[in-house]
Length: 558
Image (cartoon, rainbow, N blue to C red; front, side):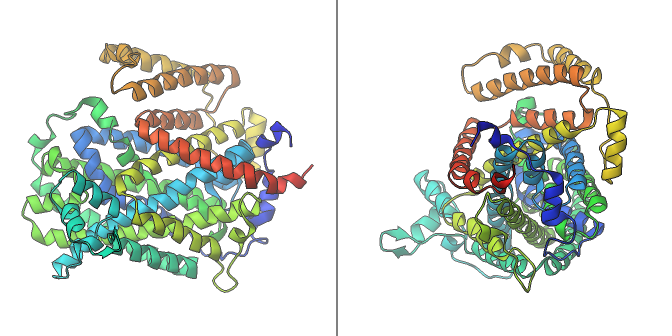
């Protein structure tokens, strides 16, 4: 097999034949634009709202709202790219399918492998967060679970070794033994994963109705949290605005970006949408706009109610009302968190099996993953495997590792989606006219020939003026900031290269800005994030070259 075969692309016409024309797939088409918007909100407002936002505020202080805006802009550009791809290629598979069309098979596999981190592994973090709030809710009813059944083994062991007082330390001391092994695991996290897997296995219609009801409840409660919290805001808590500088703000990039993960999950439901070319773009963009507004207001309320130093906890919304003595809100917040995170798990658990199903159709995964349940019309086997992939690590990993791991994989997928649209974007009036006849949604074509190079030049001048030592510090490859500095230098090189290409190739501005903004967010990732992502990527490449490449359906296409 020739090296060039690694980059062979899949024709859109063939992809549509396999599932996007409404005739060759076996999934129920039941989702409207409202359902898709609600699924997007269901995925976005969850762990990022009720848990990760605390770590972000603790790191960046009130200035974290700048990072929320930055992430929203990056996700906004990316959402438009997803929307265009979803309109051109209205099938399941999300960024995996889009990469297959634009970059070729190898990159498609890499994206599919990265999306496992976003949907499956991301659900592990949500399960842990869900468990924390659910346990608090049980406590309010005077129902007490043993400590060794409410914490993960890794965290309990670490707390014991570090002699940290609290749940983990006492759980390790009091846990029963099975031979020489202590029995410590997060029982509520395990149970919710089993229940969600069962619900998704039963069908999209049942999942849709359950998700829509939960979205309405959690939106009302989030608005209530803001409405009540605003009366306890002390503007003195907003000073200093960036207590740890912009570096402290960027240190929260994993937590903040995790808050936005989810809108792209809507694109995996293309084959179950009544009118995917019209409704998918609207669903993604509507959900992103609604959630961005709520995030910014919520971050301001949190950092205004208490000093940012009090927010480095796993349940920040409960913590602020506990500190203010508003006990009746603790109960409401716990209910909201349980509902919100349940809906997030539901959407992510819907998304992952459909990506595996699509990869299986292409021969890159075993055939069993594309089997459709004859009664429920869902990818049954893939759904069960997803439940296992989420469930098993719950016993031996912890939420901090999962949070960072998920964010870097998702950003990587976003970069390739924006790059894919950039490759496929029309660059002449004739191509624009032709594209409009094929798709119902198009990103407005804005020629970046002069605009993007000008943006790069202005940005460099402003940074040098506002932060005179920035470039000198960036070129310092010693000390703790070496990873950030290396990635920042690579980012500057990328900007210069893209500015040259924009001038020479008349690239489309919006996907170009999406690509660059997502790459900038990647500069905030720590060294261990990159190391683990590299290991995960290596495992995926081994699987591809030993199985996927040999069994690809494109092998038969001459």
